[in-house]
Image 1 (cartoon, each protein chain N blue to C red):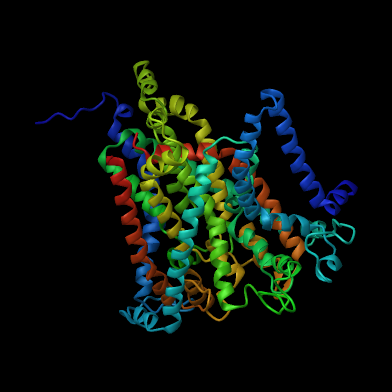
Image 2: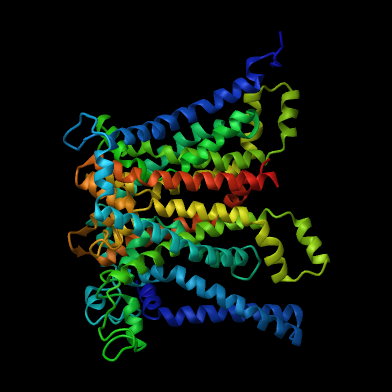
Length: 308
Length: 317
């Protein structure tokens, strides 16, 4: 018989204490995330509505109905397009800003405060600011362009005095992407800052001894070293953005027509506002395979980083 | 009001003046320290593009908040009639700020948000402090798996779960009560703070706990009396970020609570201060700014600590 190595007092037993410490949190999460998730799948296969509470099984009917719906196709495509385009800009800006904010300079504290504001402000409140900035009639951006002669009679951009940021299809999409980049760049930057500051100093010292200048150190040492963390930052903000509905809820409610409607908002409009819980659940479940793929990719990258 | 009026009517001039003044002071300081040499001049010239880039980014980040500030004190005439958004042509007024606090449910929103935030922080700490310690020190491979699972759970967006959650909230009879948010919010704050706390716990040298064990403490005592006090700064920053996560949350708050007086800030302000198509712009913008500034300050204050937690959590200890 093999003897387990146990402490002589229960409170000294690592395994026992570990299990005791971990269980409440795990239980809470399983109850509050696992259970609703299973319920969500059950909803997807049922005909539940706000009024009708009993779950009768209807097979794949909801998923088929959703998939064959032209609006859903467009919503799905819009969501993916918004997510991918915004990530390109987020990644570029976050890299620049992470390099800036891991250096010492005068006024850094204040600059960092200003630059963090878009991320610190609750999204829905920050969107109120943008709602005014992009207002159809009173937009301060339009006012500036008007003063510069780019708007108004004979203006380069438009003869009109306004660009109608949130009312014109193309501009509404551009506005939403811009605002997403604006609010999510700080988060990606902070993750990259963590990466940059975790590079062992002896590597950088060695590079300096070997005569490597700023740009060379950055491009050939720092960036390759934080590549795995960059992937994490990227996927982090992709997943956030993919599931977000707050920005479009406040700015456009999905309009004009369907041009800025994203998956989360559509599922809210069908499931809660329209009262069709089953179809709403089916719509949001379509996001799951993509999210799962992103998460697995992320974890594999992260674990590869750990091995090194 | 007079001082505020002066600042507002001369806003841009004062801003530029303050900026130039600070730059001037800085240059004078450098010159007194290093002398007005050619090398010093070259240094200033070489650094200025860097500062220019910082300034451009700052401007983009700050633009909506500047506008919020400038518009809060405008009279309706100044705001809507032949608008010139960047300057004051009429005397600034506190009337709209006053209206925000007296005529709207803004104070209710603040109270609800604080109530929910504090309750969620307490639940989150009770659950995640021991769990994070277990992940950092006590458990082996399966603990690591549990940690990865937690991380994955944090990535599940509320848009995937709000429909079944809504059903559950209705069944529990919690609809239209902030209690529903207090129950549901830990589903994302617990994984988040576990992940962060685990990083801070790993930063505590294990030798200190071993010394405590040798001195006759048991594991639990060692955790309570040695590890917790030593990671207090990390715990405080976890509290700050957990609180703000609850402040940010929008979807659950929107779906679970329809009663105006029970809504939280993030939902109440954009839905209840807009009546149909009527926007009360000055109070709206003020309501957003009043929350943005303190949260921004808190983030900036605890950012270094957050970065450290991220790093320690990501790098295997």
